[in-house]
Length: 217
Ligand code: DC
Image (cartoon, rainbow, N blue to C red; front, top):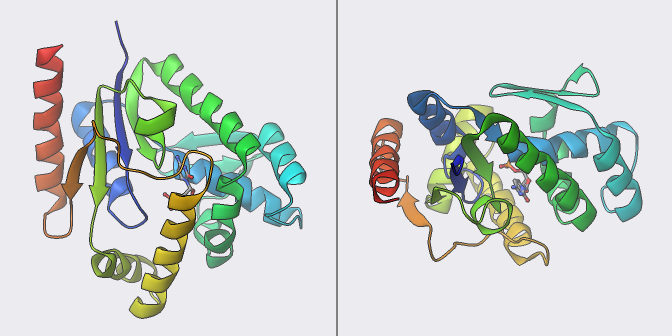
């Protein structure tokens, strides 16, 4: 049987983590945050005093790094890095790490392995429906207006809305224009705008889509 893979892609602040976690709980399957993996590599790169733009050194870190990941935590080489992967320093460096093809191919393999071990799951990222799992059961592309996305970040982590909106736009730009696996909306993805909808409403909508999809196959 084909594994049940729900791919959730979209830009920063669209609500991916919240929705993907709630959806996984509702479905009784596991959740994988692939952004946390790119952040984990970045954390280790910075911890070692390396430059995020040093392609070979960063690739070596990605191949060697050991992760223990749950829905709400990430340990990097045994250290709890759950909070440290969300700092502005990691935010600023992570898109350079994510543009590194050797890093992407290493993490892609780990993500496929994660699904192979479980037989399915909800996987959240930027290239899940396009590259990692092109045959996913359902591909969802979540989006929200830039202002709403910045406001959500501020509500969670504080800061200035305009400044954060600018940083988000810059990161989106780098994520969507990189050569390797850029963020893009796949033609077979269902686009869901979360700007004006509650978490529950979005999760319920996606569950209906999954039912329709699995009944058809
Ligand atoms: O979702 P996030 O903000 O935690 O993602 C962190 C960075 O990693 C972001 O700049 C995009 C990148 N990323 C990626 O390139 N591919 C993924 N599958 C997930 C995240």
